[in-house]
Length: 231
Image (cartoon, rainbow, N blue to C red; front, side):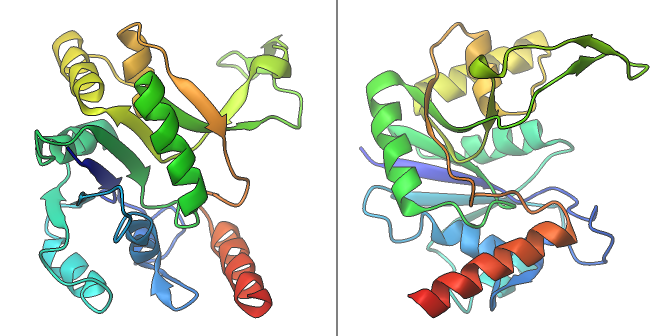
């Protein structure tokens, strides 16, 4: 049995203020989406790649990826009205033969192969694994009016990243349970938690930033440029 990857690229991606979706922007000579796809393409432990795209964008995405990877080396799936529905569509395109499924946000183009391999190993052992980063700043819980409710200990708090990796049967059950019980979550691990299943963590990477602003894009360009000059 092999492993699969589902890449969430169906978001509007227009919060940066431009007319181009952030996943299509150029980052050091390559589209952000292509860099996110590259994490899985050609990896010895990944046998299929599913890219979930906005409705009506399939042809444009195919042309965007074509200079780097030929059609047929990946599957394109149309997303839904939310990230959760988009991932559900992507999971439906994954082969039943897949043992592990990696779910990754297209807006994280700097995730490393080393991180992916750590996640695959942990998910194989525990059934589910996500990368996390320790908090350096004090965290506050606030109410709807913006007043502080509590100050939780940051020792037990983490920031979560993608890719997140799961045994296929676990993540499929998690999404089925979410659909039946009308559950919504901001990441895939939360749906697995709703099943009462354990989710292991591995050390994330501060470089694995999410492109949400022009500043993030500039930082990613700077990091890649520095890496290229030093490498």
